[in-house]
Structure formats: C-alpha cells, structure tokens
Amino acid sequence: MRQKQILKAVIPLLLLPLLSGCWTLVAAGAGAYGGYKMKENGYTLQNPITKEKGKKSSR
Image 1 (cartoon, rainbow, N blue to C red):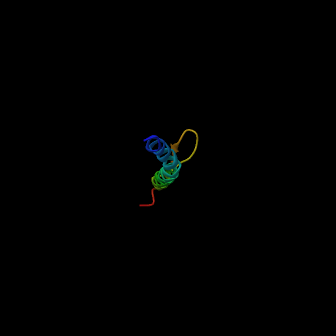
Image 2: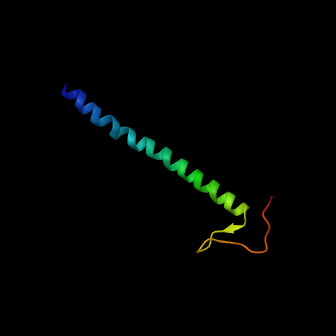
Image 3: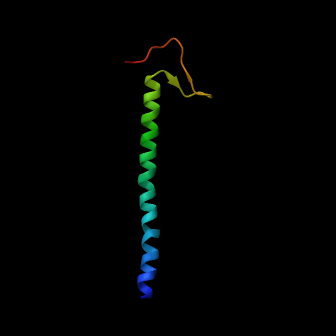
C-alpha cells in the first residue's frame, strides 16, 4: 500500500520535466511564426514595435 502512494507521487515528478521541454518548443515555434507574419506585414522589432512606413507587404 505504501509503495503505491510513493509511486503515485514519483511518476508526476518524473513526467513534468519531459513535458516542459515540449511546451517550450511549442511556445518558441508559435513566437517565431508570429514574428514572421508580423515582418510580412511590415512590422519591425523596435522599442516600441512600430510599422515601417513606405514599405509594402510582400503579398
């Protein structure tokens, strides 16, 4: 009985680091895609983020 309780506590602790890496990759991919689409529409990464004037989008 005690071993089952210990096992139930250890399994989530072992799985958490494995899942966190996947979520990091998903978030990085979403950010990269968002930045790519913003660049297509003429936005640049400045502080603050502004739209370039005089340039047309690549559509």
